[in-house]
Length: 404
Image 1 (cartoon, rainbow, N blue to C red):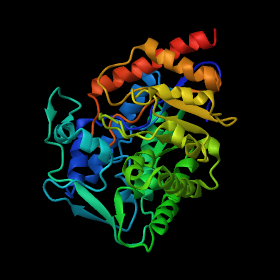
Image 2 (cartoon, one colour):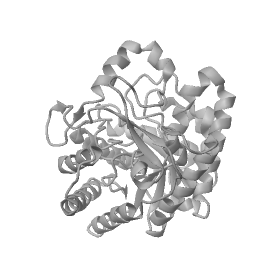
Image 3 (cartoon, rainbow, N blue to C red):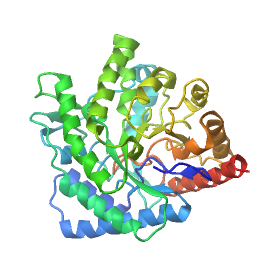
């Protein structure tokens, strides 16, 4: 994994807004319809080539394939793992579990409106908000049998498309995001394994296969784990912080089990407090979980830091030591607001982190992805690219001062 040896390198969290032609295929797959696989393969290959070209053109140093081949950052595992059954939710029913129950009670009126708005999305090639691409009803996935990996063909397709796109550009490095065992487990109820821990480690065992395929292909592996901090909002009120930390420790152990044998310098670990543009008043503080995060056998830690509920937490690194040789990828641009950060603000944020952990040990990143699922878009695609441009320009400004 590259360090920022002469300037602050730039990256993001992985998921980018998919083009309309890809979304149409995703919608059909979501509905269980038969698609023209050959046509879809060509559309996907072209879309990946374009999104990689655009990242390189803007000046992103460490790029992804936009996660275009997946229907969602965590959702995709139901296609690549055996053992899960789909259950359609009844009208008005929410898929389990419900996160942030304290906020949902405190801001009930807000959430009533927000939940309806989240069913709409910005289509990439129009300026209209529409609900036409969203499923009629949300679904739950239940584990009803042995969990095994069956996604080799899909991940190898994504790798081939990514490599073909990278052959046409010049970038510093490339990464592919994957889901952490915890975040695959959290929203899929167990109805098969005798204990929840058995279920968790079965997922970890299965995901090992995907992790190694990506590493063997020569990419940096990014492990996404939004549900690790988000679970705090469900457990802290009823069970207490210590119960949550005990729960989280087992999930960290499961992830390290899945990463066993992979050199940490090829892994980056991403955590955030959920992609929603919501109050976040019941989020777990970074200080309460930073020791758990640093236990992950990764070479870099990508942590949300532009969210105004957490931006002040750069100060945590004043007395928490980033382990030797490790890299911090702070989110210095938000995915959850349509306000485009000024490059000077981006530079200021980066300099704060550089002062505490060292200029060579930071990479400028985003808080989270811009489109966690094919039909869950956080900002308009034009704003997404403007934010990434601001990220690059802010890193240049910071570099001039840090290496002057």
